[in-house]
Image (tube, rainbow, N blue to C red; front, top):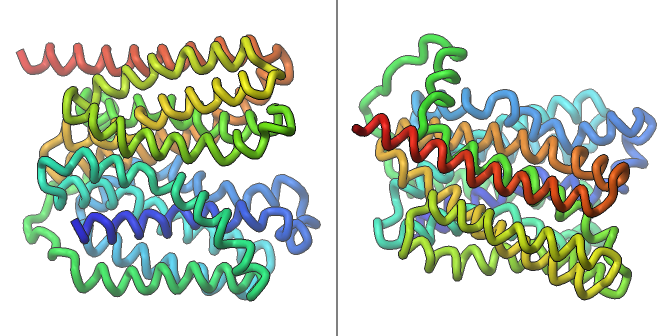
Length: 384
């Protein structure tokens, strides 16, 4: 399991490619704020845009070149880019660096679950996949603790250089300890568009991503929108408690349930469990403890969806090449949900109020259930 932990640490480095910018966002305003708010926001979001556009393509390329070569190269690239960012270059060069960082990030999040699924012993695979799924939440929690003293010591360059060292060390370690890539060459990629159609037409390759998209749409939006709307006395607990309870439930109850039912079914149960949380949030809107209860409830339920979605990749796909394609689709549709969820739910909240927002969120939970049921039915038909 040491290799699984090392790959998870690589995932922490990938998540920090977002997180390090988030924790210094206001500080960057002094450097790049003159370019305008959209340009400043692009410094954060361009990494995700790379995944949104090229997620599935990355899965195909990783399957072609081999996961070890891909992740070691991505970690090395991430280290180099962070070192460049530590020099606080002008906005055009910073955006180019962030685009390169997007390539690094995308490669890591595609390779990570594929290699973990292949390396983890069968009895421990549900835990290993759930552990991988926690890398974003854990990174943001760690950065909340580590970033302030690092910034006090070395400023923004110190934070970027610390990240560069993390990525470089892991690149070297992974190059030494990961098993060599399979010498067998997968089939050639003839046409990117036809490959996308093939993946999204497959009820095995596409199902994990299609279910995961609704999770990222809801979860990131809730983490962003709910704490500021919570009464002041419970606001800090809402902001810290939501990601922590999501991780804790995913790694405990989620893993236990994966030993008793399929990952696909557990995703559906997680969405069903989240619906009462959104309704409780609506009924208790403006009341601190009731809002807190609703926020923590839905976070716990969505934490189960998170872990089970990644566990469904190896459950539905036995070949490493297929797992890479499925992971690429998760990266692509996950970024679609992340990019669209917050602005859509924010607009609904502002224009129609918390009741409509809660009903819409519950509807998206229902869509997550329906998509998996439809894909399961398609798999059943194809197997007969």
